Figure 1 (cartoon, each protein chain N blue to C red):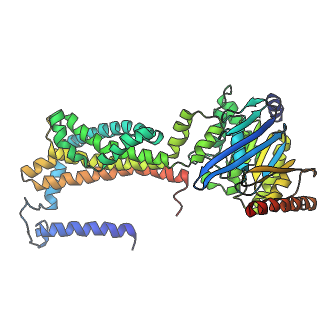
Figure 2: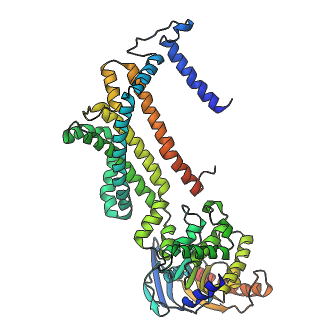
Figure 3: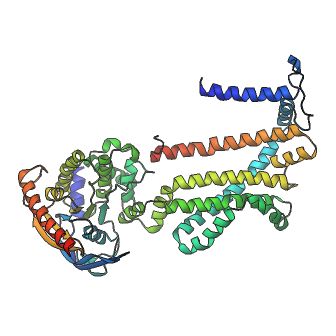
Length: 263
Length: 269
């Protein structure tokens, strides 16, 4: 059987089981309702929620608010993390200080910053951004450093004999040579940023904008499980799209250039 | 194309190199290794010189000192009478591994060294890069990625990259040792051809005596522990030389016998 057929039928069957157990299929004589709606809503309820709130703009608005935080925080994390990673690879003193600190802080799930962030920045946009930045920064820093340290020294030697200055060599040889590592670090940083933002949004209610995490949180408070599950679907969708749009093409390009896609 | 060639030859005459009483030691886990012990050598303009010797004899160290990638502990290293202070565009190196940049295509790799050269417009650089790719017979592959090329093609591109900035001296560090015999033989022909056309000073490091005799005007013999220059042979065979030539084989046999003597002496110490 063809592979896409297998996976499609897998998900269709999964949804059918869900529908059957929650009373959605009573129209065709399956009268099964194992749980009340506030425990497990039927697919029709979730779909209805998604449809209505997409039309009235609540979900698009929440996506916008969340993605804005994510992109700003992630971007700041990159802008700080990549140069610091380069410095840590280049200078032992930076490695022994910031590098070690990064190693420690990377082990800390960034949602652990939420209590402090709330005290420092209040229930504000800045608190959420801080958490996202902390999620991105250290993993980007470490993978940039690791990437630069793994560049074969012969590239830099070749560049130097061709008369390249050490700055030129750093920017146009060592940095591109470490690109495969840096990109996988950026991908990991993105995953961390996304997870930490969701955790932070559930945790922190902010007047400046209702993100997806906050919708999830209030869905629970109001016992609207169709809302909780609907928002979960949106979160999954964004995660998948980010990978497809942002990272997949970049990785494909890298593999083609470096010739690493030949199996 | 040919006119440009003449012009460039006038602009950059090949260089004279003199290395006097070079000493160089490296720390190792069994004490210091004397990589070079009072090594002196003079290389004339436009000469093709081969360094031969077993591993650990200091031939690559000497090359790196000439390249400016390493500094001697003591001794004088002069190029056209001026001391060597670091790497420079006038001395380009071709490494054992091609050292081409995988994130750039073939033509951009050749352009890399040219971009370090001031007083050229980008279109001039492109033209020069194209010319050298043509010279190494790689002009059809200018847009290819590096990993798509065979080992021999990669070394051709590396050669074009080293030649394009028009260095006075070309330093080649066992550039063909990772290639198969067929490809190597082809490249011997090509390199002699290019050398005849471009008249550069070439220093070629190898452990393959036949290769050295095939390419060099002079073959310099190094011996290990400590690294010393033992003897030099002048090769007066007519060019272009074929590696399978009879006289060439005779001479390399003679040199090999000599080399074996040193190696034995060093091991018996």
